[in-house]
Length: 270
Length: 278
Ligand SMILES: Nc1ncnc2c1ncn2[C@@H]1O[C@H](COP(=O)(O)OP(=O)(O)OP(=O)(O)O)[C@@H](O)[C@H]1O
Ligand SMILES: Nc1ncnc2c1ncn2[C@@H]1O[C@H](COP(=O)(O)OP(=O)(O)OP(=O)(O)O)[C@@H](O)[C@H]1O
Ligand SMILES: [Mg+2]
Ligand SMILES: [Mg+2]
Image (cartoon, rainbow over all chains, first blue to last red; front, top):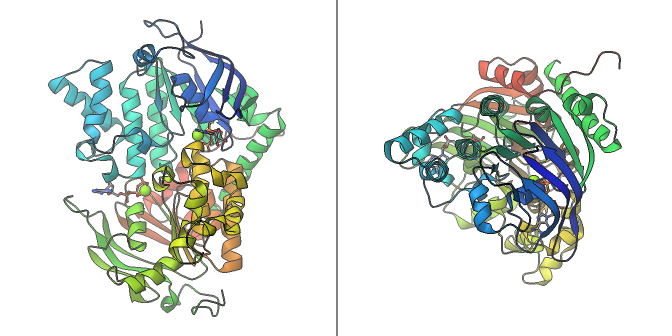
């Protein structure tokens, strides 16, 4: 039984533009899947639809079933908000592409990290404070200072790591991460990808990892979905996608990635 | 290029006097925060050249760009524009500065007014700098459509609001706004971080073209070393708020002397190696 089963998902704007068209894929418990595609191809909208968080005015058709252990099997499309609230955090959690939009500007970072821990894990008092500190310490060298800061008082990459810490703290069955390392330099990115991989493996979480960076995707996932103009154009194991892509668009994608890589190699090996 | 008073022989690294924008022994501490964020930063932007700022997350790159932009004053040291200290209080001088220097901020969404249409957002520099007629007429400027096109967005994008775009599209709107008024200097904070390779190459080409044809000077924060290698002649590496290595990009990347730089070059994620003889 799949943890997430998306069938024939289409997403339209109010004025009828189809942004995602007839998309089908599924994720098993503990599976790690990458979602790649060019800017505007529908990656973020797909993740929002899974969370039941599509922007107002947009409509989705098809089916999105979330079936997490210990929680009622739910058809997300058309589900009541109450039911979705119960699922968010536990069944699935998302690290949003732009962390600033997910963080409350008026609340200290520590309080914000505490919120899901209180709600999902029902922690209180000293245990809660310790859990907040642990969650931040996993991703940042100076958890105490960051906990006291407001979101605008920390750097872009620090905000992104806070968002990752918050999502991991929920211990969801499915972790959706939308471009979670774009604000990180490669050294920190390496650490965070390592952390994500081990956490996901240790806790048996499934991971839907959205990224435009094929090298990053191949480091953390085992299967890849390629989206173009809202349509799934190719799906396959990481190895297959990287070494023998079949769709012309995927070939182009891999080609450009290799080109950039070798341009860098040339400069670095001069 | 010939319109700038600084035009002349191709700038060389030793030509210190010709720097367009310069940081001299700059230090900075946020108010209320304990230790300073930046220490003893000295760097210069030479006309028509590009400088990359790379370094660990939280090291102070965005803070440094804000100082170069005159949004905040350094705690110690000076920022010079055309050899003169930036006078944040002097309105006429700052106006001239603003006309020359545009920025792309790290977080595109929060830097775009959510209630304004993209047309108004992109044409804002034209209006505020008096480069377009005020009021509605100015917002129909063909330069807006041209700027959107140059970043790969359709002309109709002008009629929509920022929330109707994807992350990478918003980042490109911010770039369109920064280049619409033909600035002399572009300070860009992770301008391509949300873009896929194809779109990234397009933006790098655009910036390279502006550099070539209009002598645009660029300082860019980027953690993408392939973009740095493609676009920037000079690279400064920051660690813990200090410049630990600075020089020609080729030298810095091919023979990094500082351990952090070495780690940086080694940590670039790679695709699984191509199979031999495929
Ligand atoms: N609220 C909205 N109203 C109308 N169109 C929208 C809205 N949100 C997104 N879109 C459009 O839907 C398409 C898909 O957007 P989405 O955010 O899913 O792209 P993406 O693949 O995540 O891109 P990126 O890599 O740039 O983040 C884009 O063309 C975008 O312009
Ligand atoms: N308003 C503020 N008040 C206090 N400290 C701040 C403030 N803004 C940033 N800082 C701190 O200053 C340091 C430098 O931040 P800055 O945003 O310049 O880093 P950065 O190099 O741009 O990092 P990133 O790559 O993650 O964006 C960070 O440790 C950050 O937490
Ligand atoms: Mg997106
Ligand atoms: Mg920054």
